[in-house]
Image (cartoon, rainbow over all chains, first blue to last red; front, side, top):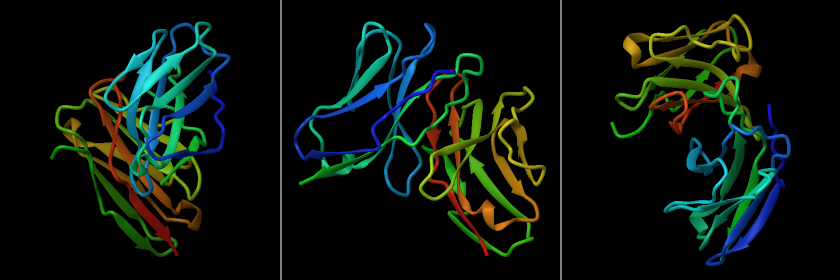
Amino acid sequence: DAKTTQPPSMDCAEGRAANLPCNHSTISGNEYVYWYRQIHSQGPQYIIHGLKNNETNEMASLIITEDRKSSTLILPHATLRDTAVYYCIVRVASNDYKLSFGAGTTVTVRA
Amino acid sequence: GAGVSQSPSNKVTEKGKDVELRCDPISGHTALYWYRQSLGQGLEFLIYFQGNSAPDKSGLPSDRFSAERTGGSVSTLTIQRTQQEDSAVYLCASSAGRREKLFFGSGTQLSVL
């Protein structure tokens, strides 16, 4: 099972882009990269996922390197409401319904 | 409802008592998950239901933990003879299928005194 490595915390200025890195150097060819976030006292919320190509939706963009060993989640214009723990997850291929949540990155958006 | 609903939102119990936690998934979602989150920790997978298939119970920490899903909808997580180390937030999630994104409820905060 591929594991992910994320920085434990980062700060971001309100209105600026937040770039959240994730390393997944042992990812398999058919494993997707998922991002979820968890705002304090709430359940995790799906943000975006991708396999090879970059993806964008109304919440964020996901940039995956060509070798797929790392990715970056981009919040284009961070707001105070984006303060949360962000989890980068690689979907386990053999049991692909399970999501293994690590410690994530605690992102604090400051005014 | 529009989202995953869990009840109660908070539960305080005495050590040794049994507790039941309820989850109402999003209507039509065939997959249902239970996770546990201890204070300051990541999420720990407990159990997974998919349609009429046998559930994956591989994450249940002990035989004091059990879960049911009746009629392919509502699920109940039961913890017997609660211990203080069972104190955590218990999160339920549902998805439209085994490879689809998960929608989480707000969780049940369980405190065992």
